[in-house]
Length: 177
Image (cartoon, rainbow, N blue to C red):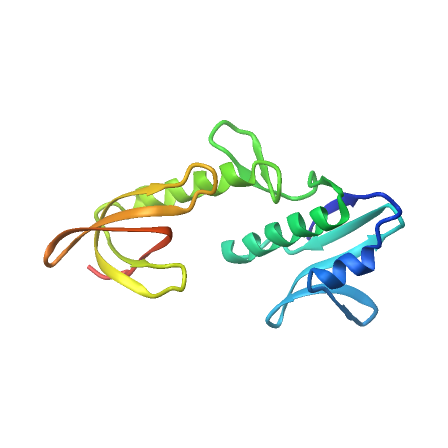
C-alpha cells in the first residue's frame, strides 16, 4: 500500500472536504470508490494532517484518478502534500516519480516509451469518449508537453496516410497483423 500525507490548517474540516470530493464512510472508514474498487482510504487523521492510502498495483487509468483526487483534495484543504511514500517508478534521469511529484514527467516518459513500441504496429485511434476514429499502422504522434495528452496521430490505413487531431487521443494496439 502506498500513501500520501496531507498537512493542512486545523481550521479546515477534513470530513467536509472528503464528502465534497466523493468519499464515503464505509465501516467507519472514509474511502473513495471507483465502481467496486476502493481507490483511496483515510488510514489516519488528526486536526492537522491525514494519511491517505492507495494500492500500488493499479492500472494507469486508476493511478490517474488517484492523482486527480489527491490534487483536488489538497486544493480543497489548502494542504501541503508529502508523497514520499508513493514511489511509482523512475524517470530516464533516475529521479523518482511519485503520485504527485514528477507525475507529469512520468506520464510523458511512459507515453513516449509506449508509442515507440507501437511504431509499425496496427493500432486503433480513439477519442476521449473511446469512440474509434480509425485504425492502421502507427507512424507518429504528437503530445502536449504539459499534460502528456496525445493531440495528433498519423497512421497508414488501407486508403493511405491519415492524421487525426484532438485535445485527447488514445492510441492502443489491436494485437492484429
